[in-house]
Length: 505
Image (cartoon, rainbow, N blue to C red; front, side):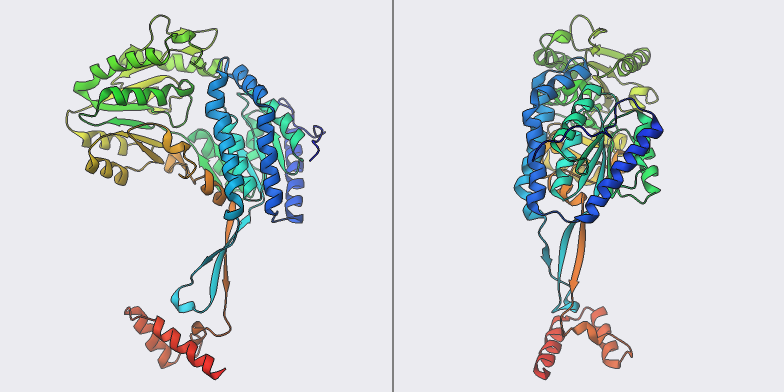
């Protein structure tokens, strides 16, 4: 397909709110009309959109890396390749490989009483999908869901974060080059424009971000009865059970925590460990952090905090924590770099429950470490379950019975056992939260189904046993219902009924 010039109705980063709202509505209505004209695109059309999405990334990989690095202040291109570009391409390729099979009708067996009727589930596109994406993984969390929506036969409008202006402007430009404005449209602007975006009557709306903003989005969507998927955050705990090797736990917890300098919704937000092991854990964390980032704040692999505002918030939270608890620094030398907005990793030992780092999602390289009574793992479980359900749980344990109990009885969005992060990166595992950490699931096939209307279709047969159940209700009908209530097998009655009708025919 020949690339399009940037649309005359492209929404710039800074624009009058009323004008932006009018342009968004116009774009939405154009998309809606296109969907009504062709409500169920063929797999060839869907594949073509996925193919262009993949090409967009591959042909502009270096520009994407530079834009994200510019937005963060410093984020190495390799990290962007690893956490944004590769998983996004993997999602697109998964949808290209499997989408044609997923879109086919699925035959299901009706309940025995309805035989010999047939039934099937028909995946149908929902229409215009709205996506509100965050800044921390700006490509993955915007284009990844677009791939799932495209495979399901939808078109997409995406509101990008104002915290990554270089990337947001770049993707807006690229989307206009590779797609028609009725297929894929990027919207940029501030929080007010984001609010207006969420008020549009989408056929489905996906929001990734904080719990507080998620509530506002859900309220706006509810006015249109728009179905929503909310991917929120919360405080995801890491539990180190008695006698689990500290070296292994510390390395894996820090690897998950310091990825993107803690700016990850599923990063370990606090650690629960036996009180007697806290000192050893701190010592091992120091050794591991310096091994991972030997250059400390100057290390090229260590990422900056995304904005000055967020950097100052983290410093204030750390200052508050230092007045109420012991803070252990993991790097030697300087603990922050004002120019590059880098903050060294800090452990906060047994902080009080009412300070910011214990009441808010941290989203930075600060990690509370909380001791539970020795050999009393139940105390750590009670600590978790007495708080809002977390998005993720990390359980470090070698005892099978205890692992089984944690998996089955602790409510959370997802669990990784004896590591961190990985449950959310597997395309075969649905990703999402519960309660204040979110609602709904996506990723891989789960994403395809989230953005599909799984329509139920029932085909009645010419002769049907269920036809017997119509007024006037005879003694025989009442006897049949009574036998069904008592659990008497019904299949023989149905087969006999059908045979009788066939003989009559």
